[in-house]
Image (cartoon, rainbow over the protein chains, first blue to last red):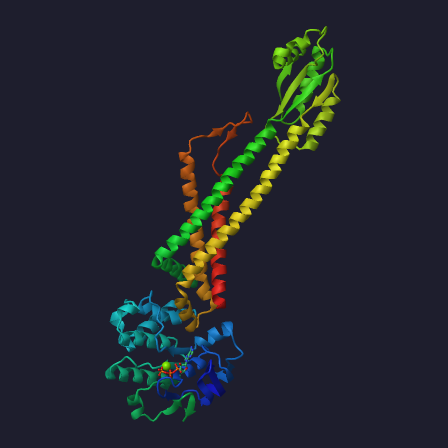
Length: 216
Length: 295
Ligand SMILES: Nc1ncnc2c1ncn2[C@@H]1O[C@H](COP(=O)(O)OP(=O)(O)OP(=O)(O)O)[C@@H](O)[C@H]1O
Ligand SMILES: [Mg+2]
C-alpha cells in the first residue's frame, strides 16, 4: 500500500529523512516514533505528497507520487485521511462544516456527507459542539475534529501525526480504539507519536526514527 | 446542481464573513466603474451632439434667373422626393439681397451702384432623421442639378469635413481613454481581489490538503468576483443616476453651435456597464487566483 524506496529529504543542509526504505502492506497498523525533530512529520507528509522527496521514489497504492500531479494527486488525497499535528481547521467554519468539507470535496451526496459527519462526531464525542467554531474549542477538542475529518471519507490510508498529543488518557484510549476499528475494516493506519504509553502494550509494528534514520 | 448550491452558499458566506475586505474591493470596483460610466455618459452625449450637427447640415438649391412659378413648384417637388429632405425656406432674389445688405451693415453702399439684382433665388433644404455621407450628398446634388430651372446645388464641404473630423477624433479618443480606463480598473480590481484571496491563503491550502480540486477551490472565488463586479456596477450606476438627477441642466448651448441635449445612459449602456463589472470581477479574481495557485 505504501512503499518508500531510498527516500531522502533535505531542508537545506538538514537531513529530515535519510535513505529510508519502508514497505507498509494493505491493512497494516504501524506506529512511527522517535524524539522531537527526528523526522516523523516529514515522513508522513512525504507519504501524503505534501512534501517532495529530495531523492528516491514513493508509491502509494501503486501510484508513484513523483509522477502524479494536479487532479490525480487531489483524487489520491481524498482516499487518504491525514490528522495534522497542527490540526489545520478552517476557522471560519463550524465543527460540522470542517468535518463535512473533506466529504464535500469528493462530490459526495449531501445525505451521505451528513450521515457520516454525524457518525464521526459522535465517535469522537463532539456531538454537542457541532455548531461551535474551532477557536471556541480546547486543543483536545480541535484535535478530535481533525481526527473526525480525516476519517469521514472511509479512507484507504489514515496518516495520523501525533493524534493524541492534546488528549487525556481516557480519550486517548477511545481514539486508539477508533483507529483500531477503522483498521479492522481494511484501512491502512500509520500513527506518528512519541507517547511511550501508546507503544507499551502493543503488538503492532513500530518504526523508530532517529535523526532521520529508520530502525525497525 | 447541488455543487453549485454549495459554491454559491460559500461565496455568500465568505463575503459576509469578510465584510470589510469585500466592502473595500466592491467600493473600488464601484469607483472605477463610476469613472467609466461617467465617461460613457459624456462621450455618448458628445457623440449625439456631433450627430446633431450633421443634421443641421443644409443644402442650398439655387434657381436660374427667370424661372417661372410652375418650374419653381416642380423643383420643390423634386426636393421633397429626396428621402429626409425638407424645405426650410424659399429665399427670393429680393430676400437674398436684403440679407446681404444686412450682413454688409455699414458697407451697404457697395450695393448702391447695382442696376439689377445679381443674386439668385434659392431653396434652403435641411435633412431630418437622416445622416448623410459625403457620397450621398454628392448624388443628391447631381440629381437635383438635373432638374429644369436649377442652376446649382451647394453645401459646405468644409463644414462637413469638420463634422466628420470631429466625430472621428472623438471616437478615437473614446477608444483610447475607454481602453485605458478598462485596464486601470482591471489592475485595481485584480489587486484588491488578490489581497482578499491572500487573506485566505490558509483556507485554500487546507482545502487542497483534504483533496479539493483546483476548480473546487477557485469557483467560489470566481463567484465572489462576479458578485462584487455586478454589485459594483449597480452602485456606480445608482451614484451616476443620482448625480445626473441633481444636475438640472438638460441643454447646453456653446458658441452658437447646435444645442446639446444632455441625456442619461440608454438600456444598452446600462447593460454594458453591468457586463463590464461582471467581466472585470470574474477576470480580476481569475487572474488573482491564477497567480496564487502558482505559489
Ligand atoms: N519546512 C521545513 N523547513 C526547514 N526545516 C524543516 C521543515 N520541516 C521540518 N524541518 C526540519 O526537519 C527535521 C524533522 O522535522 P519533523 O517535523 O519531521 O520532526 P518530528 O519528528 O515531526 O518532530 P516533532 O516530534 O517535534 O513533531 C527538523 O530538524 C526540522 O527542523
Ligand atoms: Mg512532528
